[in-house]
Amino acid sequence: MSDPISLRNIPADALQLADAISTQTGLSVNDVFRLALASGLLVEVTKIAPKLDGTLGGIQAASLAKALRRHLGSAIDLLVEHGQHPHQSTISSQQREAEIMPPKTSLSPLTETTGKENFLERSLEDDLDSLGIGVGLSTSLGTNE
Image 1 (cartoon, rainbow, N blue to C red):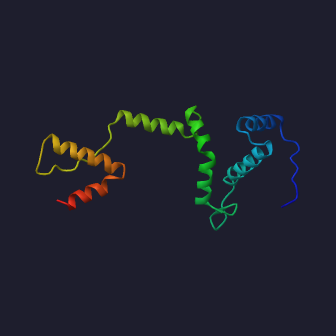
Image 2 (image 1 turned 135 degrees about the vertical axis):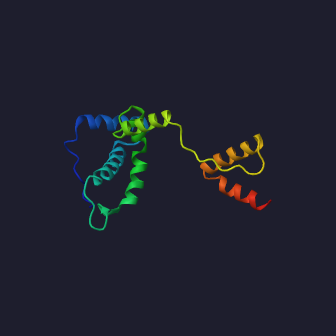
Image 3 (image 1 turned 120 degrees about the vertical axis):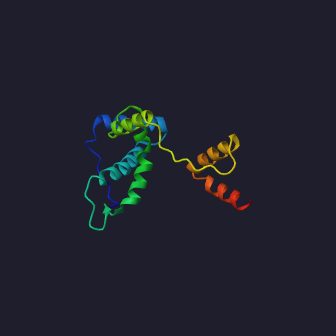
């Protein structure tokens, strides 16, 4: 593994891109190639079938997914921004359906008090619960009564 690997026959456009990245980031061209090789290998390993133990190239699928997310997050954002994500038509149709059809919500039954105060308390509680932070607040308020 410690023997040098020849990088002959690198396409001219790849060299130009590496040089542009190097200039823009301040990294050496060698560092740019190292990063590109590491990212590229993570992508390439997804193209092979998993082994019987569920690993891809010796990496657990969950770990590979986390590594890919770090490497591909900005690329996926760019694809979505320019309408080139492969699943964008599915995402777009789901968004259109959500815009057309109002979301189904389950309203909690009103307590003994009615009126504007109760409504505001319930909507705030629902908003906090949807963010995953209202449960503790609701529970603690309920136990202190």
